[in-house]
Image (spheres, one colour):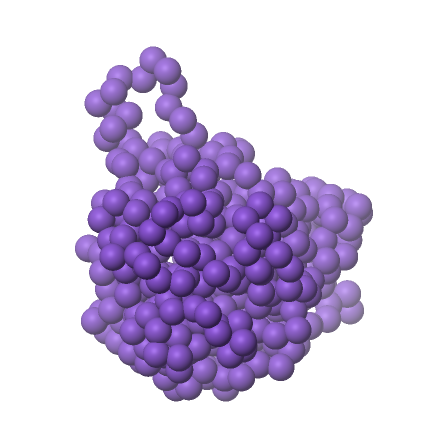
Amino acid sequence: MSIPTMGRPGRRGFPGRWGFPSAFSTLAGSGALLLAATLGSCAAPAEDAPEAAVAEAAPQVRLGIEVLLTDSLHLVKGKKVGLITNHSGTDRNGKTTIDLLHEHPDIEVVALFGPEHGIRGDALAGVDLDDSVDEKTGIPVYSLYGATFEFKPEMLANVDALVYDIMDINVRYYTYPSTMAYGIKAAGEKGIPFIVLDRPNPIRGDVVQGNVLDPAFSSFVGLYPVPMRHGLTMGELARMISGEFGAPADVRVVPAEGWQRSMTFDQTGLPWVKPSPNLPTLAAGIAYAGTCLFEGTPISVGRGTDFAYEWIGAPWLDGVELAAALNAYAIPGVTFEPATFTPGTAADKKFEGVEVHGVRFVPASSDYDAPRAGVAALVEVYKRSKNQWSWREEHFDHLAGTDQVRLGVEAGKSMQEITAGWDEAVAAFKQRAAPYLIYR
């Protein structure tokens, strides 16, 4: 499968703020205590916590950027580096990869490349960004989310190594992997190495869920036939893109040392950085694997609130009734609570400043099947919306990676009928991905 050339593809994104909150510091409700006990917290430990207990709860994972500068400098030493990054590319102390590489005497950064949300990660979803110059370093910044999504030859004229360092939420419908894919393609065509400074998959690498994208529905929010929750790190995905999806290149991965597939981000000892402006917590990232589907509907996902993607709502819904219907599915590891919220500023303008009613996804474990929970919610919300419902058809199908979810919901099929065959496709994907895995 070759990388498609995109015109103006379907997009997604998250407005809001970015920072370093505890992954579960805002959890509340019936599942919060169990989840916190199971997964721990990204917050700093209490001052009086026993050292042994702290070490056991938060092993020190070393990020790819840290490993590069201590153990693998030869990959970039003496090279003119093009760096694909944003606000999430930092070391454990919050110092940006831009500054770390720019200040190193043996590395010359000659170009910066910014994905959706920009090099600082604060632009609203879907907003076109212009080329610029980084004020702090004076390095030219090329936007890969504006006039073009692809690398132009002139952008790479003085580059002899492309480096990628972005924290991803590691769900298929995200634009950062597409930016990475175009970088791999460009590096292969120019004959230069593509180096991924790897980071943990924050929502675990041993959980793979959802449907596998039908290539007929490839877009910038999902290029490849991978599941919604694919279980790969960006380094592993880069290896698979090069080996399986038509973008052969010299891909080199600097691994995240000490990370294991069963870890969620709160178990790494690293500070949480929002991958994009409206993913404030790890819980939101896990729920996003299912609730992002509502971006292609009239329903709000709570953009501009502290629980974006953890809840869904609309003015016409009855949250108590909807929660009861969804809890009847008895999906392991998650319950649904009635919720009322007011969406904040968002590019999609869904009910901005208007009180809406719906449900909040309350996790009790990090491996609950968010994609199936999202489909169950689609089925139940569609029934209750009647003439208030409308699809953003193309965008929804690109997110879903098929038209069968939308057509199934319209036909009144059950969640079980719509998701039939998903597990078999996931099993086949896991076999295909196995040669590209790095971590145990």
